[in-house]
Length: 333
Ligand code: CP
Image 1 (cartoon, protein in one colour):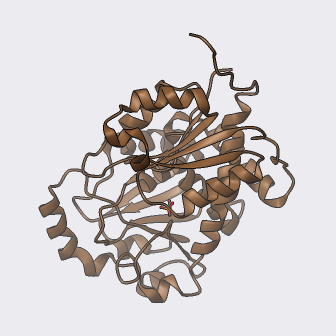
Image 2: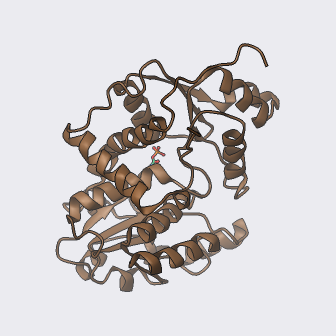
């Protein structure tokens, strides 16, 4: 069977995403045993960008599935000495059984995705996107698992607000794009709020609008965090870089809107009575969110982080199930 990469949720069907969610639940409850799925397999973790949660959950998940994951910082490979991504991928294909990649630079939107696609095109093993400049599919699938656990079987009807929050650092819009894709495919009720100038990539907006119409989901946009918080069951805060502004213009807008784009207890007064706060982390107290909310009773952020492990296992199970035969390394070509 042909290999399946896990790069962009737009490449998956609703049924496939639902199956991965069910598998993650079954793995978490102990009903599904995946302890031998990666037996004898060596995965690479090619990272050029810092990571705590994604790195650790893949490391632990691979080990718990019987395999081995080796952390490969791009700065320690010959990529540093201008060996091309294509040559690197072709060499990796001779040694590894799969690759988890976080390699992008927000100064050059789209170049991270290009590198990921180059790797995927030059390898015969599954490639998993551990966050690039366009998507964070593993994070968002894990977040949907958390939302489903939190809101119950009716989670599709409940209102999820994904709101931009102020941060000094320029962050990837990956969570926003992947959440729009997942929510639209699964028929969820999602509102996305952001200041003018911080619009998500139009290609993702168009995909999500079309899919939401097909799935019966709701998708709306707002430029007002307080208004968008009205009746929300989940408020998920995330900062992302403006995709079409110069650094100077972005900074000027960010500083002018900062006070209105820090999630606080005022927003929860407008939200539903049982609304929870989600955040993929890391976030700085006083930037995207107040310390009161982050450390308060609405916060489910560490349960959210913990679910990464079960979802990584479900995703690895999904892609490696497609390749049942061992990954043979040709001796001569
Ligand atoms: N949310 C997330 O991807 O965290 P890390 O950057 O620590 O992996």
